[in-house]
Length: 586
Image (cartoon, rainbow, N blue to C red; front, side):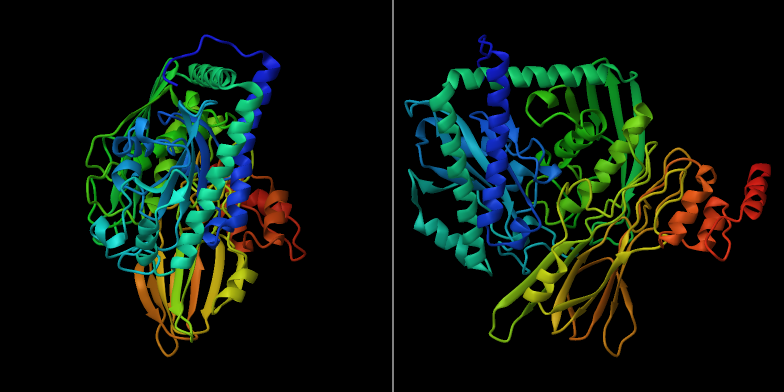
């Protein structure tokens, strides 16, 4: 598809084909969730589905997957084609890769490609692709994601260097045995692989059906026109933003190894007419611990997500809408780590990077952005062994508050900007499958940043283990509080506290496979979002409502908002006027 077609599709046919392509991606997402074995896929939605051209350019992508897979699912195809030239690929082939040098992510994220050929089965025209998080792919610990001890990628699991595991429709039994042997839960791992394959095969079938009706030339012309339109709309949106260089800074707590060393990020966003350049030159270098990402899955992906959030949130993801974006990212940085770098927790750093970039965009388009959100992966993993000897693994992340904006209070609690529509695994499922009881899941009072628009609230989750287990946690942004904008206050940070029987409580942030006894209580607190605007300009009736709903305490209403309440919960207007008058005088 490198050759640009001069053919134009009539408007009605264009719309039909354009929507049909996206409908294919949506159907594949549904099929994947129906057939997968792992909760990380069918409940948590840790996947991405799409159609890419034969050279890897993004044709369309499903809307239900993770934003940090945005427009990068075609990038690892380059490594596949280097190992398997196009002329050697046949109908029915299937490839898998989690090569960190090709995708720049942790090894759990396995991308599958299956080819689609034209009407005569001669010309390879596209690939169906499904990326999914596999629960365990070997490595030093169950789940394959170390948080505080990994120092190279080889400790984190098996690597698939663009393997052809299905040849002309026939699975390679040796490769499947190798994959199964390198997982602690082989039935689930192979089941998820087969679910990905089923989704890819359905995608091939649907694209073939489209070709039978419209012909590939018409479909190709529609795709190229869509790319052109997306680029044109993106450039128009950018041209409306004042030219200039906009900067922002933030930091991560540490890399899990050097616990006292903060990891700084200084971003520059340059707007020049109808182009955007994001400069990562002044960010932390590659680190010893597993908080690195490769160039594709790290800096380039984060730049795309932030750019889309801030400037083109309403455009569907395809190759065209990202053409006006340029990224400056020297090698050897935490977002462009080199060969062998540990990446088990690459996902932990992404939300903070996106948050910081949006802060920079906020200088250019303040009406488009919000204050900082909790931006923490809040990764929770309990593992253990049942009486029958089988391993169990509960892996989840916790919701937190999102930032407020000029348009209203912060949303949430939700996952991070890296997660999109990911949901918590329902408590009923957790308690039915694992020896865990969730005793409390509640909004966290006073965790939100104060402002004319209040930030979203964090959460409190209290779990008790009903059998001996191991706990792995990756809690971030415990020192870089979610900042407010336009005079708003910062949200409160999160924490994790472990209450073992007959022992003093212990506060932890990053730990791998910490042994905890039966009856241990673990309390997870997530951060709130930052506020927007002067808190003393928030209408007193809104503050009274927040107090009544349990979002804000009566004392914080006085301290943060200058609002006093009567015993019945209504606003004490006389005392409130006094409090706000004192503030004005100061």
